[in-house]
Length: 537
Image 1 (tube, one colour):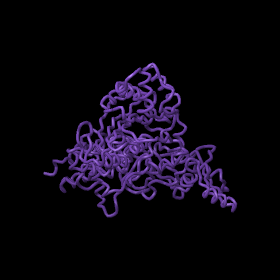
Image 2: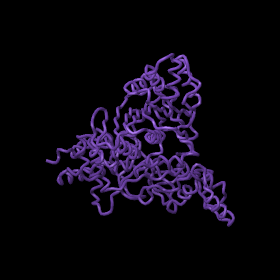
Image 3: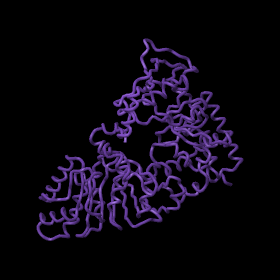
Image 4: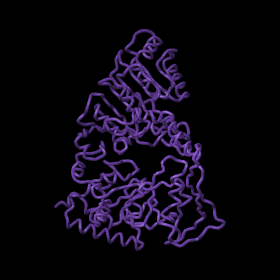
């Protein structure tokens, strides 16, 4: 988790999207509860799930409502809520709804991740926080406890860690019913969670459509039974066999019978390696917009060797933490008078006006929505192979000092916009420095250079977009690994393939000469049609 996330407003930091009471009641209605059922709500908020659970249990007891409520809240229901204000509101809502709230109960104002429970549960219900911040002081230990299952990484996201801990707390054959973000259905970083759910139980997922006025995020209801490994899951009433899920490479739950044949052959990753680029840390220091072939350089750059200090190293460390052993190593370096090379960026009295190409600058592959090809919009200061940028990156106030995609800098390839509903792919000429906002793909060694144009043409097809957005990653964030997992169009005959390559080369030439292509242009559509399944003949 980044330190920035700990500075957000409380609602975002806690990942709070409160469940509307009618929705919570609907999800609780079908639960099979008895007097012996032990239920957990791990993030109960204002009590949206607790109220209908109490209502469902009340008829199972006899006597005055206060007596029945007391038994339910001491025998059947456990819960945690990290937000003190919501905790108080929940108790008030219970008292208002049932005209009483026992002094003794198992509802605690606490962080679920730091709460121990004396038993396992028959049923766990709720709406775990989405996109929240895990307390920095427990992140690493929590990652060790919950961050890996079955040899696969579990993404350090609040709702995924909630699910993993809750699965650990379920009894055999216990039920979990959660509202959560739909992002876990396809994205690669949630593959470990999807595998865990299928390896340990039977999941059923139902998309909820509109959730509440608090968020526009798409939400789902996850209904899970801890029954042991499952051969399939159910998504919106449709059975999805596990053997089809395995075809996708990222264990996507959105594979269908119609799409499965495309995933039975090679993938784009067999032909290209995809990568993100570099995050500089402060683009304003080094990246310049291009206007009429010129850039304005407002800064000058100087280097210096500065003494190492423990304070500086703590500020650079992840979450500001250094182990005792690292502190001792740094202290020894400080005693020896060791230094660190740094770069200073100072304003010029008057910006320099420079014409491109210029030996001290390289084109920078900034994100954009261009199709086929787009001229460069930015240049990056790259004197002495990027010495100033790389020194700043290495010594800046962050803990990720690596340079993403560096070995692919200046290579010919394909690139696209990271955040988009469509795959706006375009040709990337050699010579560019890569930015993290525009992922790229480069041919593997030994692959025919013409494959670059064939794959670019493949991205112009509606079929390619459907496979990407319906199966591989239905969110706006199109990562390099998503591109690698796309099916390679093995079904296209050689003669059609040769024609597609020739047409795409011509389109790239036209675009480099100044033509702007957009989705819906006839030439784009004609190329796209060459990749349909029917071209098999």
